[in-house]
Amino acid sequence: MIKIALLFLTRKELNHPRVWQKMLENTDDKFKIYIHSKEPLEDLFFKKFRIKNIVPTSYLIHLKAWQELIIEALKDEENTKFIFLSESCMPLYPLNDLYHYLNRDSNSYMRYSRSWWPKDDPREVVELQEENRWGNAEWIILNRKHAEIIAEDRNVIDLIVRYERDHESYPSSLFSIKGCLEEVVYRQTTYASFVRPTGPYPYHFQDYSPVEASYIENAKKGGCLFARKFITEFPSETLFDIASQRLVSTPSIDNSFNKKIDLLESQEELSLANSCLMLPRLLNEGFFEIGYEIGVGLGLHIERLLQSSILSKLYGIDNYDRKNYQGIILDQNEEKQLYEYVYDRILDMHPQAELIKSSPMDVAKTITDESIDLIYFNPEHCLIPIKDLFEAWFTKLRIGGIIAGHQISTHFPLLENEIIQFFDKMSQEVHQDILEPKFWWIQKKK
Image (cartoon, rainbow, N blue to C red; front, side, top):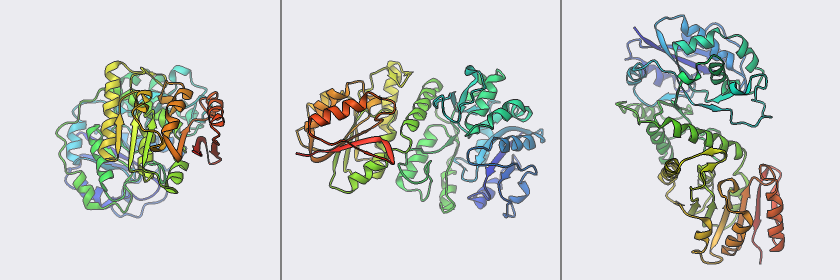
Protein backbone atom coordinates (compact mmCIF):
# COMPACT_ATOMS: atom_id res chain seq x y z
CA MET A 1 0.00 0.00 0.00
CA ILE A 2 1.23 3.50 -0.85
CA LYS A 3 2.08 5.45 2.30
CA ILE A 4 2.99 9.00 3.27
CA ALA A 5 5.83 9.67 5.71
CA LEU A 6 5.24 12.38 8.32
CA LEU A 7 8.69 13.69 9.28
CA PHE A 8 8.65 15.61 12.56
CA LEU A 9 11.69 17.68 13.54
CA THR A 10 11.07 18.77 17.14
CA ARG A 11 12.74 20.00 20.29
CA LYS A 12 10.75 17.55 22.40
CA GLU A 13 7.05 16.59 22.40
CA LEU A 14 4.49 17.51 19.77
CA ASN A 15 2.39 20.47 20.87
CA HIS A 16 -0.86 18.56 20.30
CA PRO A 17 -0.09 14.83 20.53
CA ARG A 18 -3.67 13.75 21.36
CA VAL A 19 -5.08 15.65 18.38
CA TRP A 20 -2.57 14.03 16.04
CA GLN A 21 -3.23 10.61 17.59
CA LYS A 22 -6.99 10.99 17.12
CA MET A 23 -6.58 12.20 13.54
CA LEU A 24 -4.38 9.21 12.71
CA GLU A 25 -6.77 6.62 14.19
CA ASN A 26 -8.96 6.19 11.13
CA THR A 27 -6.32 6.39 8.42
CA ASP A 28 -5.73 2.63 8.08
CA ASP A 29 -1.95 2.94 8.32
CA LYS A 30 -1.77 5.24 5.30
CA PHE A 31 0.72 7.40 7.22
CA LYS A 32 3.99 6.50 8.92
CA ILE A 33 5.51 8.69 11.61
CA TYR A 34 9.19 9.54 12.08
CA ILE A 35 10.40 11.91 14.80
CA HIS A 36 13.80 13.49 15.34
CA SER A 37 13.60 15.19 18.74
CA LYS A 38 16.39 17.08 20.43
CA GLU A 39 15.34 15.66 23.80
CA PRO A 40 13.93 12.18 24.56
CA LEU A 41 10.18 11.80 24.17
CA GLU A 42 7.91 10.92 27.09
CA ASP A 43 4.59 10.59 25.27
CA LEU A 44 3.63 6.90 25.31
CA PHE A 45 2.10 6.95 21.85
CA PHE A 46 4.77 8.93 20.01
CA LYS A 47 7.99 7.87 21.74
CA LYS A 48 8.14 4.67 19.68
CA PHE A 49 8.42 6.76 16.50
CA ARG A 50 11.63 8.51 17.55
CA ILE A 51 14.42 7.52 15.15
CA LYS A 52 17.66 6.02 16.44
CA ASN A 53 20.14 8.33 14.73
CA ILE A 54 19.81 11.65 16.54
CA VAL A 55 22.25 14.37 15.47
CA PRO A 56 23.05 17.71 17.15
CA THR A 57 20.72 20.53 16.10
CA SER A 58 20.30 24.24 16.70
CA TYR A 59 17.83 26.85 15.53
CA LEU A 60 20.20 27.95 12.75
CA ILE A 61 21.75 24.59 11.82
CA HIS A 62 19.65 21.42 11.68
CA LEU A 63 19.76 20.20 8.10
CA LYS A 64 21.33 16.83 8.90
CA ALA A 65 18.40 15.99 11.17
CA TRP A 66 16.11 16.23 8.14
CA GLN A 67 18.48 13.97 6.24
CA GLU A 68 18.37 11.37 9.02
CA LEU A 69 14.57 11.44 9.00
CA ILE A 70 14.53 10.90 5.24
CA ILE A 71 17.07 8.07 5.43
CA GLU A 72 14.95 6.29 8.02
CA ALA A 73 11.68 6.82 6.14
CA LEU A 74 13.15 5.53 2.87
CA LYS A 75 13.69 2.12 4.50
CA ASP A 76 9.96 1.54 3.99
CA GLU A 77 9.57 1.11 0.24
CA GLU A 78 5.86 1.92 0.47
CA ASN A 79 6.57 5.54 1.48
CA THR A 80 6.11 7.69 -1.62
CA LYS A 81 5.69 11.21 -0.16
CA PHE A 82 7.70 12.80 2.65
CA ILE A 83 6.22 15.77 4.53
CA PHE A 84 8.41 18.09 6.65
CA LEU A 85 6.66 19.04 9.93
CA SER A 86 7.49 20.59 13.31
CA GLU A 87 5.93 20.10 16.74
CA SER A 88 3.67 23.10 16.10
CA CYS A 89 2.34 22.01 12.68
CA MET A 90 -1.24 20.85 12.25
CA PRO A 91 -3.23 19.69 9.20
CA LEU A 92 -5.91 21.95 7.73
CA TYR A 93 -7.94 19.05 6.31
CA PRO A 94 -8.77 15.44 7.27
CA LEU A 95 -5.71 13.23 6.88
CA ASN A 96 -7.53 10.79 4.61
CA ASP A 97 -8.34 13.66 2.26
CA LEU A 98 -4.71 14.79 2.30
CA TYR A 99 -3.60 11.24 1.55
CA HIS A 100 -5.79 10.96 -1.55
CA TYR A 101 -4.99 14.50 -2.66
CA LEU A 102 -1.21 14.09 -2.44
CA ASN A 103 -1.27 10.73 -4.17
CA ARG A 104 -3.05 12.11 -7.23
CA ASP A 105 0.40 12.86 -8.63
CA SER A 106 4.07 12.11 -8.01
CA ASN A 107 5.16 15.74 -7.55
CA SER A 108 7.38 17.35 -4.95
CA TYR A 109 6.20 20.72 -3.63
CA MET A 110 8.43 23.56 -2.44
CA ARG A 111 8.55 27.35 -2.41
CA TYR A 112 11.87 28.40 -3.88
CA SER A 113 13.55 31.29 -5.65
CA ARG A 114 16.96 32.79 -6.24
CA SER A 115 18.50 33.51 -2.84
CA TRP A 116 16.83 36.69 -1.58
CA TRP A 117 19.40 37.65 1.05
CA PRO A 118 22.39 39.99 0.52
CA LYS A 119 25.66 38.56 -0.80
CA ASP A 120 27.37 39.17 2.56
CA ASP A 121 24.62 37.38 4.51
CA PRO A 122 25.74 34.41 6.68
CA ARG A 123 23.43 32.23 4.58
CA GLU A 124 25.23 32.88 1.28
CA VAL A 125 27.05 29.68 0.26
CA VAL A 126 29.91 31.35 -1.58
CA GLU A 127 31.57 28.09 -2.66
CA LEU A 128 28.61 27.22 -4.89
CA GLN A 129 28.47 28.55 -8.42
CA GLU A 130 26.10 31.49 -8.53
CA GLU A 131 23.58 29.73 -10.76
CA ASN A 132 23.20 27.05 -8.06
CA ARG A 133 22.57 29.43 -5.15
CA TRP A 134 18.88 29.16 -4.35
CA GLY A 135 16.64 29.76 -1.37
CA ASN A 136 13.59 27.82 -0.24
CA ALA A 137 11.00 27.45 2.49
CA GLU A 138 11.81 24.76 5.04
CA TRP A 139 8.38 23.14 5.04
CA ILE A 140 8.23 21.02 1.91
CA ILE A 141 6.74 17.81 0.52
CA LEU A 142 9.06 15.51 -1.43
CA ASN A 143 8.46 12.55 -3.69
CA ARG A 144 10.61 9.46 -3.31
CA LYS A 145 13.05 10.40 -6.08
CA HIS A 146 13.91 13.77 -4.53
CA ALA A 147 14.02 12.28 -1.04
CA GLU A 148 16.57 9.74 -2.26
CA ILE A 149 18.72 12.52 -3.72
CA ILE A 150 18.89 14.15 -0.28
CA ALA A 151 19.52 10.85 1.49
CA GLU A 152 22.41 9.96 -0.81
CA ASP A 153 24.08 13.38 -0.71
CA ARG A 154 27.27 13.81 1.25
CA ASN A 155 29.20 16.62 -0.44
CA VAL A 156 26.67 19.45 -0.79
CA ILE A 157 25.15 18.95 2.63
CA ASP A 158 28.58 19.00 4.32
CA LEU A 159 29.23 22.33 2.62
CA ILE A 160 25.91 24.01 3.36
CA VAL A 161 25.75 23.03 7.05
CA ARG A 162 28.67 25.40 7.60
CA TYR A 163 26.29 28.29 6.91
CA GLU A 164 23.45 29.73 8.99
CA ARG A 165 19.88 28.66 8.21
CA ASP A 166 21.16 25.73 6.19
CA HIS A 167 17.60 24.50 5.62
CA GLU A 168 16.73 27.67 3.67
CA SER A 169 19.18 26.99 0.88
CA TYR A 170 19.87 23.27 0.83
CA PRO A 171 17.09 21.40 -1.02
CA SER A 172 16.74 23.98 -3.80
CA SER A 173 20.51 24.37 -4.26
CA LEU A 174 21.05 20.59 -4.22
CA PHE A 175 18.29 20.00 -6.77
CA SER A 176 19.76 22.77 -8.95
CA ILE A 177 23.16 21.08 -8.86
CA LYS A 178 21.55 17.72 -9.69
CA GLY A 179 19.61 19.28 -12.58
CA CYS A 180 16.17 18.45 -11.22
CA LEU A 181 14.97 21.70 -9.60
CA GLU A 182 12.53 22.34 -12.44
CA GLU A 183 10.83 19.03 -11.62
CA VAL A 184 9.71 20.47 -8.27
CA VAL A 185 6.28 22.13 -8.32
CA TYR A 186 6.51 25.63 -6.89
CA ARG A 187 3.96 25.76 -4.08
CA GLN A 188 3.50 26.68 -0.44
CA THR A 189 1.99 23.73 1.41
CA THR A 190 2.50 24.85 5.04
CA TYR A 191 1.21 28.24 6.16
CA ALA A 192 2.74 30.68 8.65
CA SER A 193 1.93 34.33 9.24
CA PHE A 194 4.81 36.83 9.25
CA VAL A 195 2.88 40.04 9.86
CA ARG A 196 3.15 40.20 13.66
CA PRO A 197 5.04 43.39 14.64
CA THR A 198 6.07 42.25 18.11
CA GLY A 199 6.26 39.00 20.02
CA PRO A 200 7.03 35.57 18.54
CA TYR A 201 7.93 35.50 14.86
CA PRO A 202 6.29 33.99 12.86
CA TYR A 203 2.91 34.54 14.50
CA HIS A 204 1.86 31.94 17.10
CA PHE A 205 -1.76 30.76 16.94
CA GLN A 206 -3.24 31.01 20.42
CA ASP A 207 -7.04 31.14 20.65
CA TYR A 208 -8.63 31.28 17.17
CA SER A 209 -9.57 34.94 17.43
CA PRO A 210 -11.24 36.54 14.37
CA VAL A 211 -7.79 37.59 13.14
CA GLU A 212 -6.47 34.05 13.54
CA ALA A 213 -9.55 32.64 11.81
CA SER A 214 -8.86 34.96 8.87
CA TYR A 215 -5.26 33.70 8.71
CA ILE A 216 -6.49 30.10 8.48
CA GLU A 217 -9.03 31.05 5.82
CA ASN A 218 -6.29 32.74 3.81
CA ALA A 219 -4.10 29.65 4.21
CA LYS A 220 -6.80 27.43 2.76
CA LYS A 221 -7.57 29.88 -0.03
CA GLY A 222 -3.87 29.89 -0.90
CA GLY A 223 -3.78 26.12 -1.28
CA CYS A 224 -1.95 25.28 1.95
CA LEU A 225 -2.45 21.84 3.48
CA PHE A 226 -0.86 22.44 6.89
CA ALA A 227 -0.23 25.43 9.15
CA ARG A 228 2.13 26.31 11.99
CA LYS A 229 2.67 27.65 14.76
CA PHE A 230 -0.05 26.36 17.11
CA ILE A 231 0.92 26.75 20.77
CA THR A 232 0.17 23.96 23.24
CA GLU A 233 -2.67 26.00 24.80
CA PHE A 234 -4.54 26.33 21.49
CA PRO A 235 -7.92 24.60 22.02
CA SER A 236 -7.87 21.03 20.74
CA GLU A 237 -11.52 21.00 19.73
CA THR A 238 -10.86 23.96 17.46
CA LEU A 239 -8.05 22.09 15.72
CA PHE A 240 -10.52 19.30 14.95
CA ASP A 241 -13.00 21.86 13.64
CA ILE A 242 -10.36 23.47 11.42
CA ALA A 243 -9.40 20.12 9.92
CA SER A 244 -12.98 18.88 9.49
CA GLN A 245 -13.60 20.75 6.23
CA ARG A 246 -13.34 18.27 3.38
CA LEU A 247 -10.61 18.76 0.82
CA VAL A 248 -12.57 18.57 -2.42
CA SER A 249 -10.09 20.65 -4.40
CA THR A 250 -7.60 23.43 -3.83
CA PRO A 251 -7.63 26.78 -5.60
CA SER A 252 -5.94 26.95 -8.96
CA ILE A 253 -2.52 28.43 -8.39
CA ASP A 254 -0.76 30.84 -10.73
CA ASN A 255 2.78 29.67 -10.06
CA SER A 256 4.53 32.45 -11.99
CA PHE A 257 2.66 35.18 -10.10
CA ASN A 258 3.00 33.36 -6.76
CA LYS A 259 6.75 33.06 -7.23
CA LYS A 260 6.97 36.82 -7.66
CA ILE A 261 4.73 37.44 -4.64
CA ASP A 262 6.84 35.15 -2.46
CA LEU A 263 10.06 36.82 -3.57
CA LEU A 264 8.55 40.26 -2.90
CA GLU A 265 7.45 39.06 0.53
CA SER A 266 10.94 37.77 1.32
CA GLN A 267 12.50 41.08 0.29
CA GLU A 268 9.95 43.08 2.25
CA GLU A 269 10.45 40.93 5.36
CA LEU A 270 14.20 41.50 5.03
CA SER A 271 13.82 45.27 4.71
CA LEU A 272 11.41 45.37 7.67
CA ALA A 273 13.51 43.17 9.96
CA ASN A 274 13.31 44.56 13.51
CA SER A 275 11.07 47.38 12.28
CA CYS A 276 7.73 48.76 13.43
CA LEU A 277 8.89 48.66 17.03
CA MET A 278 9.27 52.35 17.86
CA LEU A 279 6.33 53.78 15.91
CA PRO A 280 3.54 51.97 17.82
CA ARG A 281 5.09 53.16 21.09
CA LEU A 282 5.08 56.76 19.85
CA LEU A 283 1.47 56.51 18.71
CA ASN A 284 0.24 54.81 21.86
CA GLU A 285 1.77 57.57 24.01
CA GLY A 286 -0.45 60.27 22.48
CA PHE A 287 -3.78 60.93 20.79
CA PHE A 288 -3.49 59.65 17.23
CA GLU A 289 -6.54 58.64 15.21
CA ILE A 290 -6.02 59.19 11.47
CA GLY A 291 -2.97 57.96 9.57
CA TYR A 292 -1.74 57.57 6.00
CA GLU A 293 0.95 55.22 4.71
CA ILE A 294 2.50 56.36 1.42
CA GLY A 295 3.73 53.36 -0.59
CA VAL A 296 2.12 50.10 0.54
CA GLY A 297 3.80 47.47 -1.63
CA LEU A 298 2.91 44.01 -0.38
CA GLY A 299 1.41 45.50 2.77
CA LEU A 300 3.56 43.87 5.47
CA HIS A 301 4.36 47.17 7.22
CA ILE A 302 0.81 48.49 7.18
CA GLU A 303 -0.40 45.17 8.64
CA ARG A 304 2.11 45.41 11.47
CA LEU A 305 1.05 48.96 12.17
CA LEU A 306 -2.65 48.03 12.16
CA GLN A 307 -2.04 45.26 14.66
CA SER A 308 0.06 47.25 17.08
CA SER A 309 -1.38 50.78 17.25
CA ILE A 310 -4.59 52.48 18.35
CA LEU A 311 -5.27 54.29 15.08
CA SER A 312 -8.99 54.33 14.32
CA LYS A 313 -8.38 54.81 10.59
CA LEU A 314 -5.32 54.04 8.48
CA TYR A 315 -5.22 54.73 4.74
CA GLY A 316 -2.69 53.04 2.50
CA ILE A 317 -1.84 54.82 -0.76
CA ASP A 318 -0.15 53.09 -3.68
CA ASN A 319 -0.86 53.46 -7.40
CA TYR A 320 0.48 49.98 -8.27
CA ASP A 321 1.64 51.00 -11.72
CA ARG A 322 5.41 51.15 -11.50
CA LYS A 323 6.19 47.80 -13.25
CA ASN A 324 9.47 47.29 -11.36
CA TYR A 325 9.01 46.20 -7.75
CA GLN A 326 12.46 46.04 -6.12
CA GLY A 327 13.87 44.36 -9.22
CA ILE A 328 10.84 42.11 -9.82
CA ILE A 329 9.01 42.95 -13.04
CA LEU A 330 5.21 42.71 -13.02
CA ASP A 331 3.07 43.10 -16.11
CA GLN A 332 -0.19 45.06 -16.06
CA ASN A 333 -2.31 42.04 -15.17
CA GLU A 334 0.08 41.00 -12.39
CA GLU A 335 -0.02 44.52 -10.93
CA LYS A 336 -3.81 44.25 -10.84
CA GLN A 337 -3.46 40.87 -9.10
CA LEU A 338 -1.00 42.38 -6.60
CA TYR A 339 -3.41 45.18 -5.73
CA GLU A 340 -6.30 42.72 -5.28
CA TYR A 341 -4.10 40.41 -3.20
CA VAL A 342 -3.08 43.22 -0.82
CA TYR A 343 -6.61 44.69 -0.76
CA ASP A 344 -8.22 41.38 0.22
CA ARG A 345 -5.59 40.50 2.80
CA ILE A 346 -5.63 43.84 4.60
CA LEU A 347 -9.33 44.66 4.50
CA ASP A 348 -10.48 41.17 5.45
CA MET A 349 -8.65 41.42 8.76
CA HIS A 350 -8.62 45.15 9.49
CA PRO A 351 -11.90 47.08 9.01
CA GLN A 352 -10.18 50.30 10.11
CA ALA A 353 -7.95 50.16 7.01
CA GLU A 354 -8.61 51.54 3.55
CA LEU A 355 -6.44 50.99 0.47
CA ILE A 356 -6.41 53.82 -2.08
CA LYS A 357 -5.12 52.96 -5.56
CA SER A 358 -3.95 56.39 -6.67
CA SER A 359 -0.97 58.73 -6.84
CA PRO A 360 0.04 60.13 -3.42
CA MET A 361 0.36 63.56 -5.03
CA ASP A 362 -3.25 63.45 -6.25
CA VAL A 363 -4.55 62.23 -2.89
CA ALA A 364 -2.71 65.01 -1.03
CA LYS A 365 -4.68 67.61 -3.00
CA THR A 366 -7.95 66.28 -1.56
CA ILE A 367 -6.92 66.47 2.11
CA THR A 368 -7.49 69.43 4.40
CA ASP A 369 -4.40 71.02 5.93
CA GLU A 370 -3.50 70.04 9.51
CA SER A 371 -6.07 67.20 9.58
CA ILE A 372 -3.81 64.13 9.81
CA ASP A 373 -2.18 62.60 12.90
CA LEU A 374 0.35 60.32 11.16
CA ILE A 375 2.05 60.15 7.76
CA TYR A 376 4.35 57.20 7.07
CA PHE A 377 6.63 57.08 4.02
CA ASN A 378 7.77 53.81 2.43
CA PRO A 379 10.40 55.01 -0.07
CA GLU A 380 11.00 51.74 -1.92
CA HIS A 381 7.31 51.57 -2.83
CA CYS A 382 7.03 55.06 -4.26
CA LEU A 383 8.81 56.46 -7.32
CA ILE A 384 8.01 60.10 -6.53
CA PRO A 385 11.02 62.10 -5.23
CA ILE A 386 10.89 62.26 -1.46
CA LYS A 387 11.24 66.05 -1.45
CA ASP A 388 8.10 66.40 -3.60
CA LEU A 389 6.20 64.07 -1.28
CA PHE A 390 7.25 66.03 1.80
CA GLU A 391 6.20 69.32 0.24
CA ALA A 392 2.80 67.90 -0.74
CA TRP A 393 2.07 66.22 2.60
CA PHE A 394 3.79 68.24 5.33
CA THR A 395 1.01 70.83 5.50
CA LYS A 396 -1.58 68.07 5.93
CA LEU A 397 -0.07 67.06 9.29
CA ARG A 398 -1.46 68.68 12.43
CA ILE A 399 0.80 70.28 15.03
CA GLY A 400 1.98 67.45 17.27
CA GLY A 401 1.43 64.88 14.54
CA ILE A 402 4.14 62.47 13.40
CA ILE A 403 5.84 62.01 10.04
CA ALA A 404 7.95 58.85 9.93
CA GLY A 405 9.60 56.36 7.62
CA HIS A 406 12.19 53.63 7.40
CA GLN A 407 15.29 52.74 5.37
CA ILE A 408 17.22 55.88 6.30
CA SER A 409 20.88 55.46 5.25
CA THR A 410 20.58 51.70 4.61
CA HIS A 411 19.38 51.03 1.06
CA PHE A 412 18.96 54.73 0.24
CA PRO A 413 22.16 56.52 1.34
CA LEU A 414 21.21 59.80 -0.38
CA LEU A 415 17.80 59.80 1.25
CA GLU A 416 19.16 60.67 4.68
CA ASN A 417 20.48 64.02 3.45
CA GLU A 418 17.20 64.84 1.69
CA ILE A 419 15.19 64.10 4.84
CA ILE A 420 17.43 66.13 7.13
CA GLN A 421 17.73 69.05 4.70
CA PHE A 422 13.97 69.33 4.19
CA PHE A 423 13.07 69.24 7.87
CA ASP A 424 15.95 71.55 8.83
CA LYS A 425 14.42 74.06 6.44
CA MET A 426 11.06 73.60 8.20
CA SER A 427 12.71 73.94 11.66
CA GLN A 428 11.81 70.35 12.53
CA GLU A 429 14.10 67.87 14.31
CA VAL A 430 14.66 64.42 12.80
CA HIS A 431 14.88 61.64 15.40
CA GLN A 432 16.37 58.16 15.20
CA ASP A 433 16.49 55.35 17.75
CA ILE A 434 19.48 53.14 18.48
CA LEU A 435 17.22 50.07 18.74
CA GLU A 436 15.74 50.67 15.29
CA PRO A 437 18.37 52.56 13.27
CA LYS A 438 16.50 52.35 9.94
CA PHE A 439 13.51 54.18 11.43
CA TRP A 440 13.23 58.00 11.53
CA TRP A 441 10.51 60.40 12.65
CA ILE A 442 9.65 64.00 13.39
CA GLN A 443 6.92 65.34 15.64
CA LYS A 444 5.61 68.50 14.05
CA LYS A 445 6.29 71.71 15.94
CA LYS A 446 4.81 75.14 15.30
